[in-house]
Length: 116
Image 1 (spheres, rainbow, N blue to C red):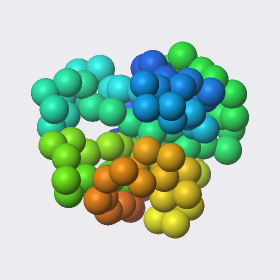
Image 2: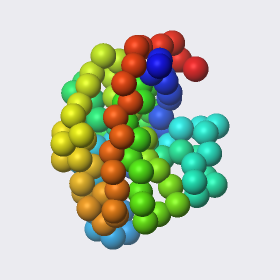
Image 3: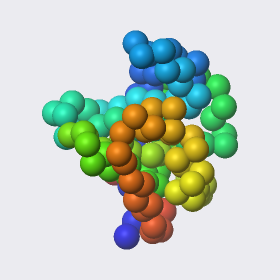
């Protein structure tokens, strides 16, 4: 299976504080044109060694899907081409939000592909 390449619009950059007083240690946003389980654009965490500052958008590859068993939507994990992370590494990065949900991480394995 080829890895899906996507563009993320970041609406919660590193340092953003949400209404529940969670500070975002990574960039977070959405993928235009893909509708998630909440009937809004698909949410995505950005985890990348090359992005350690707030950004407004990001192009990368889907490496994992976080399935929330107690919510209507899944979260996608996007990283720079060629980077990989274990489930534990991903969990450590997203736990600031996912600790409130019963979720599981499914890694996407495959070859790199062109942007779709």
